[in-house]
Image 1 (cartoon, one colour):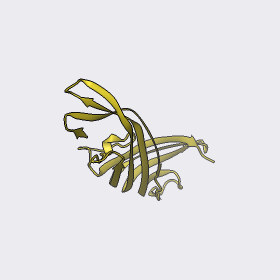
Image 2 (tube, helix red, strand yellow):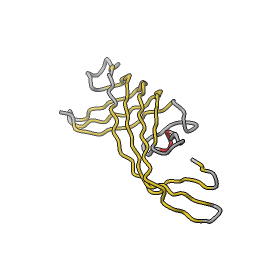
Image 3 (cartoon, helix red, strand yellow):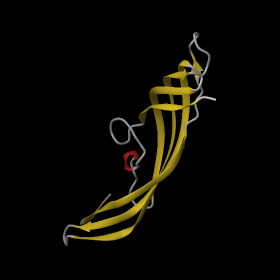
Image 4 (cartoon, one colour):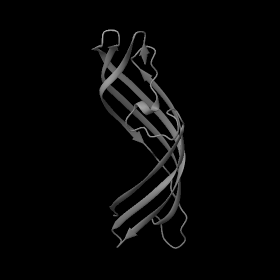
Length: 148
C-alpha cells in the first residue's frame, strides 16, 4: 500500500464478522456410545470478516501525517478439512471435547482503497501457516460443557 513520495498506513482498526463451521462426526469407539470416544469429522467452513479504521498518509518529504479516509476491507473464505478428536462425558453430565486437524481455504478479499488488495493476515481472526497468503490452515481447540 505504498504511494509515490509517501505511504498509506492504517491506525486503530476494528474487525467484526462471523464463521459457520458445520461438521459431521463419525464416532469410532466400540466401547462407548456416541457422543463419547474418538471421532473423525469432515467439515466445511464459511467465514466473513470486515475490518474498518482510519488510514493515514505519511509524506517523508515534509514529515507530516494526515488522515486520508476511512479504510474498509472484507474477507470471504470457504474451507474444507477434517479433524480428529476425543470426547469425554463425566458423571453423565459434564462434557470435554478436544480436537485438531488440517484444512484448506479458498479466500477472496476486497478493499475500498484503490490499488490495494488486502492479504489474509491483514484481518484479525485469520490464522494461517507459512506466508501471508497460504491456503493451508489448521483447526484445533477444546470445549467444556454440560451434557443434557
